[in-house]
Image (tube, rainbow, N blue to C red; front, side, top):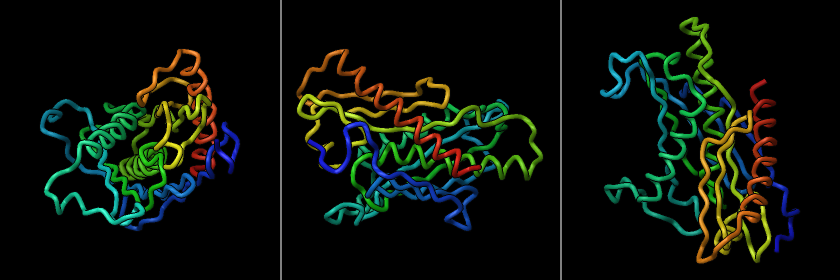
Length: 236
């Protein structure tokens, strides 16, 4: 069982904004030893299927630098294609961030959020969503100021956290060692109203009950509330 913190306690979480002078919005997010650089870019054009609709788009790209893990990995660009894991994670990040944006009020422009994992110790996708929101928020504030946009574009705050079951016990915010031996592994994306954007939950050769799911879900709801409080302090 976990020795360094209680079952319902997250790792130390921090958001450092404006860490890149070139990006429209930037954030270095840390969930314990997982560190992700999130950079948002405003593009004054939309994908072809959205032309002349009056609506904008938010998308994300995700990647891990070669020494973000304990052994060096080759860059996916050198291999010529992304892995299925990378594609799945960046789609999750994009869906999560789009869920809290009024795409009509954004207008016909696209915001791209790049999430690069500098150091990985579990929970890279949840850190990317939580930090990606900060970079997106800053970029949209810049956009609104530059174009004097009065309509609200950000509808809600959003955060994400992992939770799981190890040895039959619920745990919040799994690090890599915990994640690798979890019987149940879940990721929760929740906004500040308590509404859910997405839940990913998998039993690793293990069936789990509705009561066990509710235990980790309740842990995650409390965890995301704390994440959003830190986001609001960072953006105040």
